[in-house]
Image 1 (tube, one colour):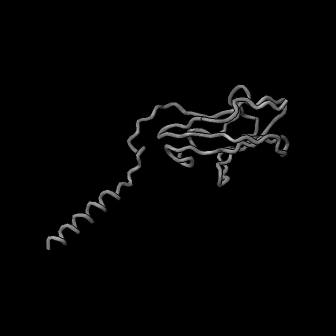
Image 2: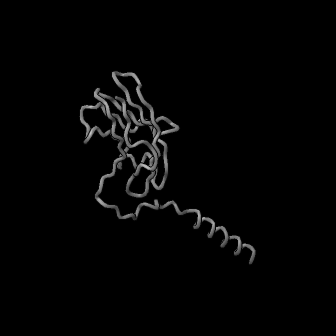
Image 3: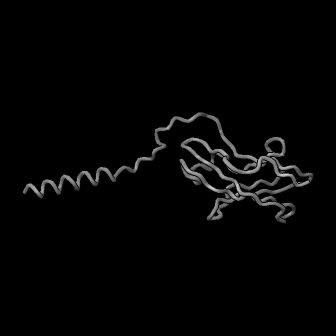
Amino acid sequence: MFKNLILIFLLFIFFVSCNDTKNKCEDAICTQIFAMATVEINSNDTLQTQSFLLPEKTLLHFQDGTNLSFNNSYIIADDSHLKILGYNNTRSIEFIVLKKGTVVHVDTFIIATDCCHISKTKGSEVIDLN
């Protein structure tokens, strides 16, 4: 009887300790800042860019060059991609630059995430295509 009680108690502890499926970011308090990882591209041509999540090659972002945010800056990833990048994670992003449908530059960026924002931890600040 005593062995059965110990077994039931150990099983209870096991299930309680393994049942912690709560999202660790669920209670995070985030700022209203919207973070973006960008790269400046020096070029006289209209360019298109694509950001792919590696290794699965999921398209994260496409930009056609007509609606640049500022100073020829192109977006690699932003806070809207947090779910797909994963919280408290580091991911590689392949950034492809196209001119008239032809690839003219490929770069890999490392993007880190926390519960609230992304940040570029590795990759070019400027790509010169002139």
